[in-house]
Length: 330
Image 1 (cartoon, one colour):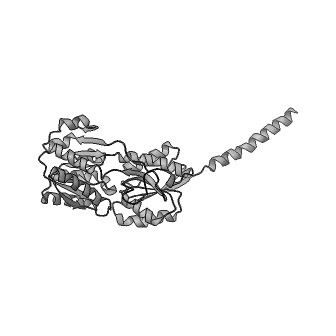
Image 2: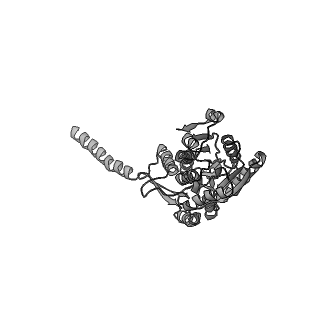
Image 3: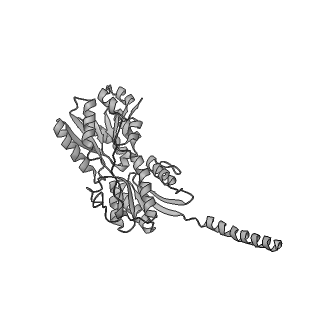
């Protein structure tokens, strides 16, 4: 009896071995898409926003290279490439596609009405006609909406606080971004109250950024506001270098720009938005529908001041800004 019991036990254990191995091999691998107008920093690297998204997915149990495959598509600032990339991703019949920026979200909206799309960050999703409302997005798109149009006037006020005699300001726009004209409109509205003249300068490539700052000088601008744009978000070093070359106090939405040398950044933490987008992807992979996931908007705006840049420009940081600054770069 003992021998039989031993054989039975051994047989049961042995039967479990291949099953356990099979279960481990059969772990589901999720495959999603990611479309961004930003540039790929290196063949193996991730830009700051994409890295934040990957980190968010990892914290939810999705690890790239193990149980997660991401089809990355970087347009490198060339908005004309978005349509082709969107078609590629839609053709893969992926369970969800993540994207960044209004232009990319619009392209995906035109390319698919069925595949769920999560917008990691874009300016005014409702105003751009990408979702029906914040509470009820409708359709196949949801995500996070950046409030840049509403903070543009505040950015102008911050520049005026630094330079009380400021009379002319230029707004750096990307002609390929359909949301940028609305940003310009809000700046102009705020400028009219302060008696400041506004000029628009355009750039759609890294090389065009320096030319845009040169044009701003020619038009008499004493400062520059960088409009929210997915391409601009990855051009902090170039924008800061151009601002320094032409000695123009520059304010942007992106903290990375202040770190690179721009005078001020004021706005939402877009990298954190990308990290938050992972929660939308997780819910959709588990069966949720985009139309049932309300669009989120930021509740916190960060003010970052680069004191080195202020000193280089001969500007004293007003005490009132030092009190409210979230970070002062020494």
